[in-house]
Image (cartoon, rainbow, N blue to C red):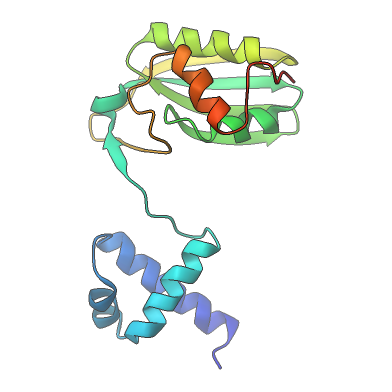
Length: 174
């Protein structure tokens, strides 16, 4: 029986092999790492089920838009906002700073869409006391993880469709 440290080290070896070649087969990973094929397959499945690794489609920022905004939100129920928007293809990243504040990076084709998104947030979530936005542009080599099938969404109309798919509706105000 392997110890916790041994298991963690072997997991890190497998994760490193995946990072070097995410499209590599289990057989290739086993060969490169010197680990048993069945062990590697079981470990990868375990890492996925425990949400330690995830395999997902990513698209170039050139497809969804390179305009980016860092959005800082203060108010009540910011964890709910962060959870809801974790399903949005336009939200690259989110972080809770403390119990009443989050930061997200939002991408779009243009600043008008970003403004529409901000207006939608204000209308859907009561309790936002402060909202601060800093605009910028993503590099052309940035890839965006695809979280749902609404890749070519039109703000704010498709936001409502997308969010309602995950149990967040316009009538569900915080």
